[in-house]
Length: 277
Ligand SMILES: [Zn+2]
Image 1 (cartoon, helix red, strand yellow):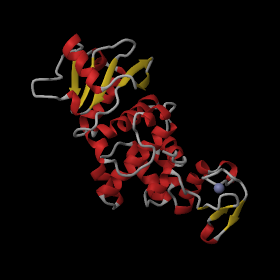
Image 2 (tube, protein in one colour):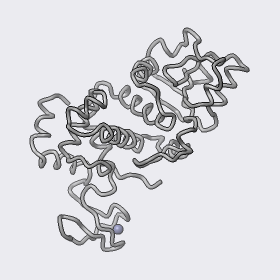
Image 3 (tube, helix red, strand yellow):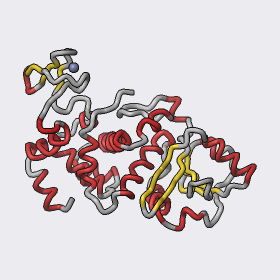
Image 4 (tube, protein in one colour):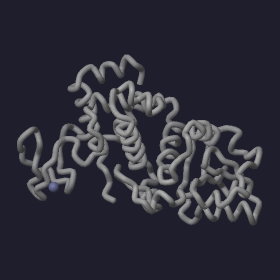
C-alpha cells in the first residue's frame, strides 16, 4: 500500500476502525465469536450478548488485534512500520509507546500470520501457541521444530517436519557428514531429500564449543528464499527457539508476497479470531 492510500485509512479513528471492521464481519453480519450464533442482544457501550451462550462481546473480542491496547489507527501505523521492517526500538519511539508494547504487537501479528497459514494445525501440534501471551518456562529451553525449505520458482514452502528433531540434525552432521552452517543461533544444512535445506535452532544444536556450524558453500545460500531469510535473520540478535517458527512464517509470507500489499494482508490476519489452544 502506498503512502497516499494509507493516509486515507488513517485519516481518523473512525476511518481506521471502519477499515478493520470490514475484515471482522462480512457484510456487517455479527455473530457470537464463541458459538457462532447469529441471534444477539444489544447491551451497553455497543456490545452484544449472545442469545444462546450468553457471551458478551464487542466488535474486536477474541480477535488477534484485541491482544494489544492499540486503537485501530495505532494498529494501522504499527502495521505500516512492521511492513517496512522498522526496528522495534524505532517503532516504539515513533509511536510513543513502550518497547515491550511493540514486542507484544510484533508477536501478535506473527501469531495472526501463523493462524492464516495452511499448516497452522501442524505448527500448533509441535508446540507453537496459537494466541499471544507468556511462554511457559519449559518452552524457553526447548529446541525449535525442524523445518524443511522448498523454493519452487520463487515460491517458498517452509514445511514443519514433525518426524525430525534438532538432535537428529546434529546426528546427521556428526555421523553422516551433512554439511551445516549458521546465521546467529539458527542452523541450516546442505540439501536433504526433497528439501533445499533443513533449518532449526535450539540448545541441542550447540552441545559444546567443539561442534561448529561453519561449512562453506551450502547451496541454499546462493539465492531464493533461504538467501532472503538468512539476510533478515542476520539482523536479529539471536532468535528465541520458541519464536523461531513465527519468524520463519513471517519471512515466508514476506517472500511469497514480495510484490503485494502487506498492510492489508496483515490487517486481515489481525482481524481473525484467535484459535482455541
Ligand atoms: Zn454464543
